[in-house]
Amino acid sequence: MKKRFVAPLTESEQQMLASAYHHGEKRALRRRAHAIPLSDQGKTINQISEILQIRRDAVSRWFKQWEVSGLDGLIDKRRSGRTPALDEHDHKRLQALVAEHPHQIRALQARFQEETGKSVATVTLRRALKKK
Image (tube, rainbow, N blue to C red):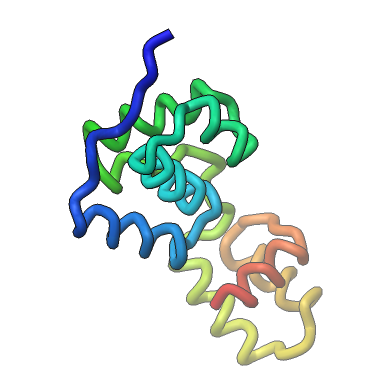
């Protein structure tokens, strides 16, 4: 089987990957940013997959993404998901209702449903208020 490595890294690429590895927001990015310099140091895909406890095809995919897009290729893209129950207007209205009914989540829930027609669980309201 042919051994595959990334192209030799420049000094700026090494610094960029080190920064992503040490300060990356998500664990997945930190792992990917670690794999590239390991390859540059001469580690094989099998060795890297063993070190990082990840499947070898994932490491190979990271190398391809790095070669095509650089660091941007290693960052997770936004994914679709469930649409939020509350939009920005709802969040603003909630803030106004909290001023009227502080510490009364049930009254807040009833008033919010009455005004917007949206039936939202108290847990969802608490989460929305904590966010803001």
